[in-house]
Length: 97
Image (cartoon, rainbow, N blue to C red; front, side, top):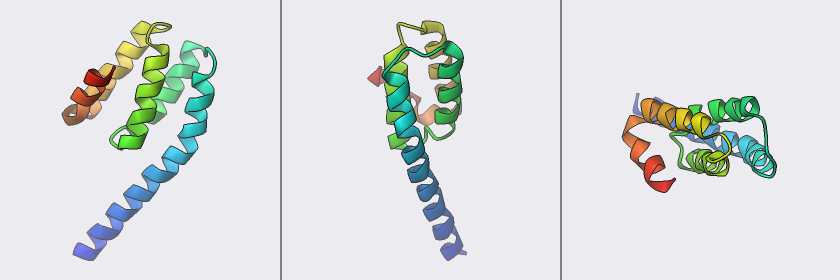
């Protein structure tokens, strides 16, 4: 049983690493120009699912900071969604914005 739990934990880490590899270029591209609110929401929805991972959370924060003054109500919504989903870690996002 312990071995199985270890294997599952390793798989989760691998999934987060792959997600970071996929989302990093998308975040860089979205942060290099002004996107529509719909495109921004689409990206933040996907990042939110992985925001328990420190690297993905960094990407999430980067996008939020970039668009805070462009789409403030959208960013507010996704900050609150982060708090709802990852309650224990919500203080980190709030303190870093």
